[in-house]
Length: 575
Image 1 (cartoon, rainbow, N blue to C red):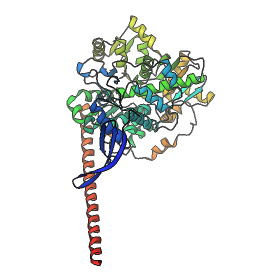
Image 2 (cartoon, rainbow, N blue to C red):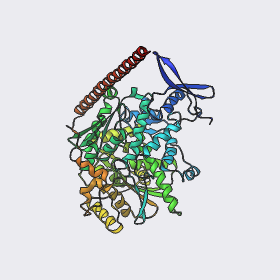
Image 3 (spheres, helix red, strand yellow):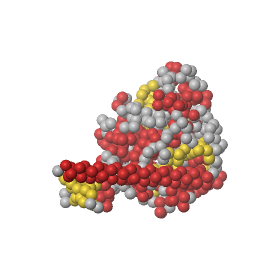
Image 4 (cartoon, rainbow, N blue to C red):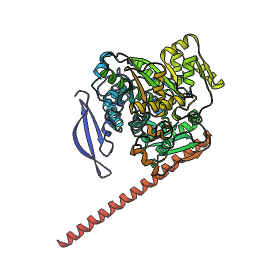
């Protein structure tokens, strides 16, 4: 009422001597007429959104109700004050920076309390709508995107919270690939689909992503079968678990392409960044990003901080602030907690938990962000020596001064070292606590929690749990993020627990499925050539299929016409 278009008539028009059905919708004196041959259930919303965006209004809201805009951390004026649609489709800024909000919306205590009874999907819609208003995505469409994304999860709560050994564990592994990245990548896939269907990139997108294990499969499951999207995922040979590899390489959709790179995750990530820096290649293939450099990933992950805060304070009436321990390699997951706190969520300690690849722990302990060689560990998704999302935090730590940030990053890229001290280090320590868990700590934590509590942790989740023990924050105000299901890392977990609990059937069936993966050297030019070749092959295949379909449709029409004519002639002769 007031904001909505209402369907008033259903009719048809003549075009090329054929009647085409149309729906006519009105709001006040405004009328929109749309063909009904679209198959998406939200096609009417999409076309109305186009009309509203052309008129500068959305759902009756004025232009004053604007979405948050975004600028690059590195300060290029051409990469400043961009729309949500633009930064999602672009991924990495063209000056090699990362997009950050130009301002952070606030959530008042009253608003937060009003969200307490909402489902996860409705709560997530409210949180995202703080950044994304109707001028970017109409509210009904946003709600549809979020609800369809959450519908892919096996739990009605999406990310259920359980209490173990006096603290809480947030189970982020109930999505299609049994890892936390499903929360963000289901949403990102649906945002891509909406933006492509409403005019972005001429309807085409080539996603290039690097994975240390979980991003790849989550991206693939979020993008498989999406119209106009090619998804190319790079993973380091021998540095992901066998089940992670199979989750990626057994998906048969022809828009999915897995590439096994001779190198480390950081090598894969460098190839992605080099590809975005190659403007000719980037623009020719319509390059997009699914790694946590894409702002949508971080925004989507803020939703489970709000959700878990509300669930903890439901159960623990004396708790006013909630601590979060986050196993992290690329810094995106814990950054979402930092941003939630900036929005007004009552967050206590944010704990950065690392394995032996501890560049983040060394930074928060001593101010030393110094690159070292990667160590292969039993928590491979955290085997990262350069955290791609960390630049966003450094930008805020610099006082949001792009010149300072650029100086830091250039120095780091040249020397492999970035050092802070004094007030900057004090500020960093006030923002985050940190701890490191080595393989022995991790296995001991897995063994203890299974033996004492009957709860099975994956190696990454165990790193986060070990951190709260080290920092003496094992209490009912603390949440550890469980980032993956233990079954994804069976070989590592069996070093602590034998026999292992039963593996979900969705994972055990992968061993009987055919693998599709292409080996590539650690060479950006070779990978870029692969991307272009695969896109050309898929487009040619689809054009041939569409041509065949049209021929068949015409043959059916001709046959029907001949049959109808024969029937008519026969009837005429009988008369």
